[in-house]
Length: 140
Image 1 (spheres, rainbow, N blue to C red):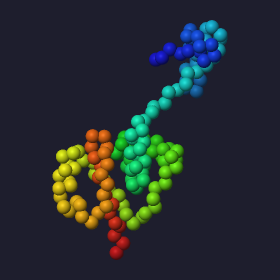
Image 2: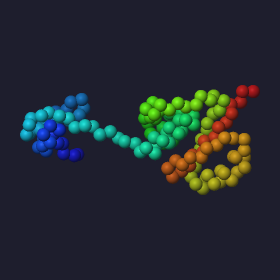
Image 3: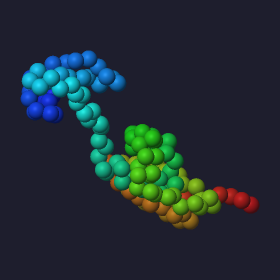
Image 4: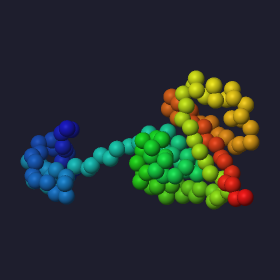
């Protein structure tokens, strides 16, 4: 744990003085000021923020993005609100995805049936690749 410093006089001699709202409270021995240290939140690498927003725009659900990236679906919802992202409303198509390593991707792309009659996007996902395909709903 980092040593607490008084925000008023910047003195380093402080003692614990209880817990308020789940956070440790301190008292400065020099000036008598009571304070709590600021909670440091977890920061998520911007790479995952961008990937989550890309997947959301492609029509992948919040829960699926959570499973794919390992980032909370609530975080993804907050990023969508924060950056004012609006997913396109196209109900005629349904995205499906596969996560493959490089060798599997080469084999997948070598098969002609995987390349015909479909829209497809390939994106990097860490050390793997994600293929997103769109299939038309059968209304007939």
